[in-house]
Length: 314
Image 1 (cartoon, rainbow, N blue to C red):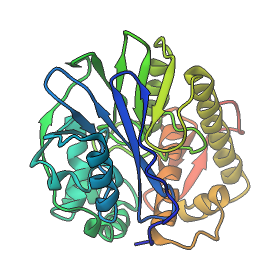
Image 2 (cartoon, rainbow, N blue to C red):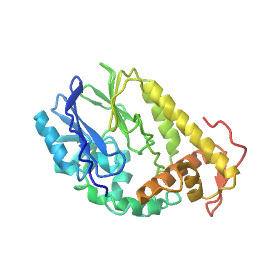
Image 3 (cartoon, one colour):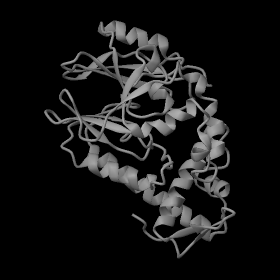
């Protein structure tokens, strides 16, 4: 676990009517902070995301500054920086049921079904086991589904970065709480689906659906608020198109294994085991996307080949 950045300011603010926000540090190299949102709802304050072990003091200070003690917590997705402190506030969180496989990383070691979901998944389980001490406990979930309404907010299921990722949109004024979907300055990693889904297609579809909304303000979990959701969605879409082309070109250049392809795209100098695993996870998600389009294939030994010369895959 990394050390906390002591220079992360709490920065309690109200970025939109009925929305309070403060920032907590994270004991991880990047991102090193999380913005926590507190929504005014007819049923009382609703906390959106929590931070993880190491963020407790800032979480308590932020809630005290706002004068609230929320007993309802919603998690945008199941990456541990977003839910690690949930059980310090409640035993049950509001979440999409798609978070359950990711939550299992922190409970039963993921199980054989997850470990066999894609090449290298068992190593992913081992790496992420190191993060289990960043959670106060594993909450139960009260299921949220696409189209559900919480007060003035619509729930939008936006898988790709995590199978259970959701965004909250308020039609009255166009405010979007986007979790990790539309991050400014960060490119969210793509997590291969454990249910056989094409995670990159899911992510690109999620971008398209959110960008089609009449958004006036984006409130991300990491980074500063901004206004141009369509522009950011276009940037992220173009980024992944380039990555697909890079992988096709690398295979044609003679790189055929997952590790080598990941090193070609992300570099071979990643030091942290978690960073290397995230790079391979995302590389596989892109290769799987190419495979489903008949542009790449893998033999039983995990050797990748392409069907044709690199082309526009967007």
